[in-house]
Image 1 (cartoon, rainbow over the protein chains, first blue to last red):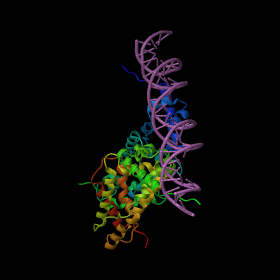
Image 2 (image 1 turned 135 degrees about the horizontal axis):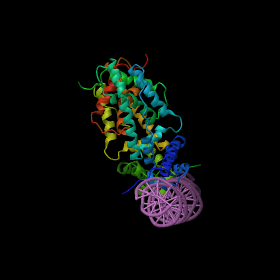
Image 3 (image 1 turned 135 degrees about the vertical axis):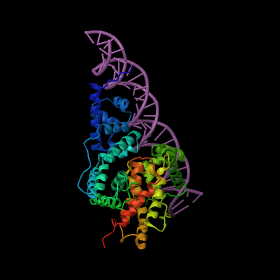
Image 4 (image 1 turned 180 degrees about the vertical axis):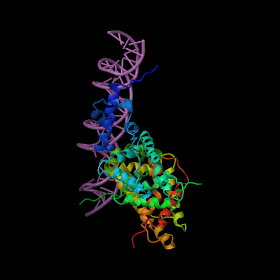
Length: 197
Length: 197
DNA sequence: ATTTTAACGCAACATTCGTCGCCTTAAAGG
DNA sequence: CCTTTAAGGCGACGAATGTTGCGTTAAAAT
């Protein structure tokens, strides 16, 4: 029978390594996140990291799955447009942090590692699930003609931010969060995202 | 006086290398696109590629700038929603090609290389500029309350595709192009993208 | 306390990546 | 045709990356 050893030294190594990953991401971005740098910073030997995590993608996946913030909940401002604007503001700040920011690094990693990609998908799906309440509250207030596909609504609101800031690398425009939120809210009000029945 | 040598051998090397880049991208994706692989396929020595292009990012930038399709123009279907749907259909097919597709590889490269990123931005900005006519035609037909910010409108229409397929890695949904186009058209009809005056 | 062995540390190794010096080839100019 | 010299070919190198075998440490079970 195979018995794992999770306590004591192993646990200590794991937390040290994962902490180093987060710190390096913020300091040097995805390009500065090498297995060697992580190992050295964690005070652990290279081979240990290679054997337990294999590569940077698996490291990031572990960080993401571990550090899922279970307390996060979407803002509640009293109107759909303001809820979406507040959400977009969070996205905007996460993506704009000037130099190397964590979100961009994670997305870059997702293009190189299947593990990181699925971990990031899980994280986002979790967020979208929690944001479903934004749509139902709007429907309850009578802002929508009926129940709506919350996921489609939220993607419509947030996607332009990722597109402009990440893909198009446009100059950052502080009014973008509100403009994108307004467009999505308008479409929702027109019943575009309404679910049948 | 410094005289460049662009004819004969140099030109032949350049076309062979750039062709190899495109072929390798389709066959092996961004991860299969190494300088060594490009050189071998092109029948050229490694150092030649390193000296002329420096790295994979510069290679891709050259490919993008060279292969800009100057004949492309947006579809003209007779209605804003159908124009946007047709555009989204093109994006959808470019992003969905099953295995390693060219667009995904280019975007992955953009996260690693400043040169590739700016070349890709140029390409997209050119496309958005050509698509401006979609918005003006819609305004002329009376589908919009007035002249609109064509770029914001087009980003609103296409961004959800990139978001779902590239970032969220959701299961591909053939109705997505039309649904996203419908949402953007609805928002535009409500005057969300209208420019002042 | 003792035994077992998973997990770690260490050093050596192979591979890949990018650079450099030197020689050869052939484009451009007369 | 001849000269000049960019541009390409070749081999060697150093650095970074990833792997393997083996000895050591300490977690877990008795």
